[in-house]
Length: 99
Image (tube, rainbow, N blue to C red; front, side):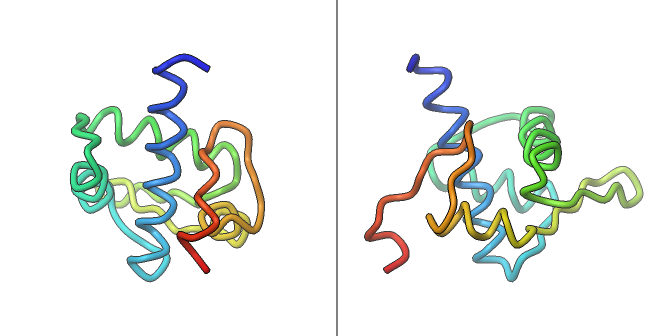
């Protein structure tokens, strides 16, 4: 695995976990701030790209509300975020993170 893949997988996991922590729903601004708090200082455009990828994998549902993406985590997305399921392209959380 190269460094880029590692970053992509970790950012996707952080986004899913942030959605869990936010009650299952958050907009792109909130997710960008959460990613920033975990050391992933990325642009809004790249945040949207990760959100679109997660939606393509059926890990989140996306809505475009007045030009702002809003994400709702799916049951599968929550399972991946908590380590009960795996998804190629998303880092698996440590077992101790959700025990």
